[in-house]
Image (cartoon, rainbow, N blue to C red; front, side, top):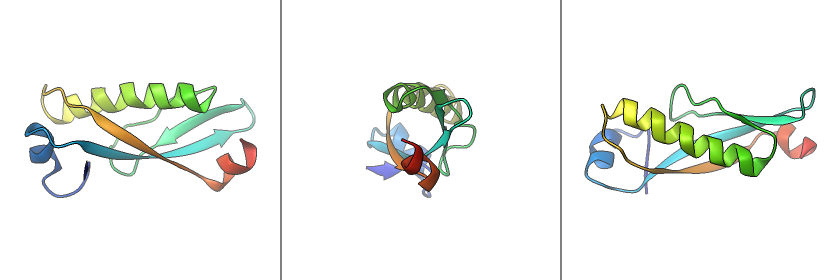
Length: 91
């Protein structure tokens, strides 16, 4: 897999290489929900009440942001979740 954000990632995505996006998972104990950020894909901020819901929403967000970045080319990327220490303590 080729990671979004690496040099030439847009070219790699356009030719069909499998893409990977790092997603950091955070937990908000006040509202009891998870939210994400991504060091690879600017603008990826999604929320979910469960990790499964968050993963589903992250995939939708990643697909949409990548389509924008690639000027209409639809590609798919696999999110790789990493949990912040706060999320691990609260989950």
